[in-house]
Length: 448
Image (cartoon, rainbow, N blue to C red):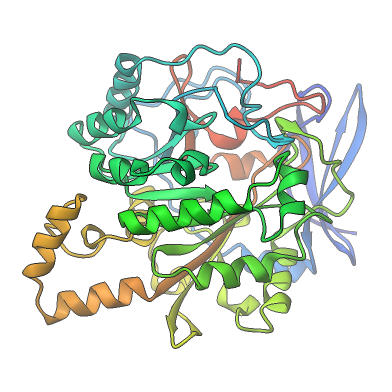
């Protein structure tokens, strides 16, 4: 057994903050901790050698203090907001605009559709916009929930955010209303929406019945068609669960590539065991090395493990990313972010996300607006270099993933570099993995 480092974590049963160690053996790297009341927990966090784990964690020692941080009021991850010990000012902010949902997925980090959480008014969401601007904005805004399209005033909410100075809006959605309501995607585009983060767990109905409770594939396909017609960027977002859809990773990637350039990429989310989750946590959960290996195997080497690197501004063990240029059906890996020294700050990452996930000209041509008319006007004035940039943009395809933390693998060193936050009217900006943290019974640390 080889000791790789010390950190802090929590007990999965009582959420007590505990000292923890990272140790390696011949099977991988494990996080080990001991609760005086509930005993020892040892969780796999990396499949592979200690040297491969260390090599992945490229050095990025830069730190940013949040703007107007909260005074530290307790042991992390409690009483965040962000506090003065956090090391990132924030990049992407989730605004949960409703707790309602038109599905009741067996897996849902927000346990959406259960409980009686009050829906915030437009005026209250205006106040959240103002808070974000006062604390380091503009950030990239993720409209989330629940299912945000259940709000009839969603276009107005986007327009209000644009007027306050936010430049990028992403819709986290199951896609049902986008599929069923003619003209709805266009109304969101006209209001200023940039991209749709579309729940897309697989290419067969069996996967959706298991993870979402019903057949949904036809809705997904129609939502993609309607968003493409409206000129919205689309990112497919599969939750990958062992034994459920981990054999469909290659098929998901091929499906996404066949729907370029509107589909801008795939953002994988290996399942995390928090919130409402009916999947049993296995002894060998999906780690970054396994995801990369499955992608290489299931694409017959079109995607290579060596194409990928860890997070830039965030902790490298939180994510993986590669960009490709696609021509004549062939993928060519582009320079890694770690090799070009970009995305080392929250603002770098915010700009990268805005550019990659958007489809329209505004993401690459200065002066182009978000509406169809503004983009068309800008395109009429493009020169050869602008046209080259636009062509390159539309040939670019991103493959990424985020390894969210639950009570078993929570590493507070990772959490302190988190730049994806939930906006909460009581606490402020709370790192995503802290806000959604639950004990093994599904009781939240923050959510009410």
